[in-house]
Image (cartoon, rainbow, N blue to C red; front, side):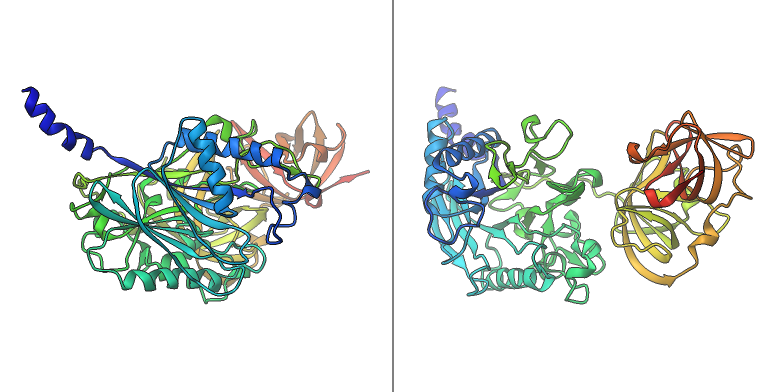
Length: 518
């Protein structure tokens, strides 16, 4: 028995899953100034060796806790600061023996990779000779005799004229390299793509210079036809088709970056069919996760990014991105029992959503009118006398007074208020008179109407947080407390949302939505 265990021990070690992760560390610069640094990473802005040491400590803390066997990094200035990071990691007991980094000349930041497995070769994929366009890092590691290629990416951001055509150059360069590889070559694509996993549904008009064609979905082929590729389609997929692991998580958990409250899935791990074929290295099913520790968030729930305020680095925070990771193994991929056809999209009415607590798949709402839009949220209806519903934080690409077909992926009930949490514009059906979908003073009766209506031209007395109208009263909630008028004021409400928070309430969003009558 003892000899049998000795014989099996290497096999047991061999079959242990390993973790692959990607992390945008948010501008890890050294303290040497060579002229390619961002302007705010100089002594003038308090970027000193002391600040670098603090940044290294914070970055090392995350990497140690993440404990990935292979880690792709974005926003690393150069090989010098990467070596400092490795030294710091070794000092705190989290060593990485192997590393690689791109070598794009005159670039402010590079992409890199840390590995506990031997690196057999590395190279740069040049996307463009232009100084501001980063290279893609290609690294081949040896997983106990099994070769595995990693592609570490950091595509052009959407800021500073970040048109979609610029990200398409990255995707084309990557696909060109993949096309030259053997059919059975195993690889993983990861990094910060500055693109949502469903970019075809979220592409903003101001950066859409490609007639809706997207780098991540269309060129990298994470979408075939109208929908994202499903996991159970991968084994029979064509070469160059890829599966985004964000599909593994519930809709409301698909984010690793938050900017002014807008959640995005910019950080990605993307797989070809070889990771599902039960040969060589395979994906460990349902192992994809976002790395979340309490210290990576502020008390208010924001990502605890590196703090830069009033032109100075403050020696606080970590990064504006969260790491994402997944497990892989030399043991065969285990497929789940095939679910019902999740690609099928059912056509529903708003009224139907009030009978459903959560969605199992996608639904389509046709001819939805944006009755009122404030910020990234809106109230929509399909008919004048039909029910309305609230779009929470997902109305970015919608315009008030327009009619749309919407693809809906998420709904919830928040303290009694029915909300759509994930909706995407499929088709703009043109302008419409949205005011005919609102309730006026003649039709406003607090005891008879339902939530998610829009009110217009309502007058009444504001007293003790209530609005008195037609001898009835209804609670009033001002989105900004400072907007609340003096007690006893007479109000003329131009537009408001009849919302719900444990009970019906009139929600007033902006100063322009009401006035105080003398």
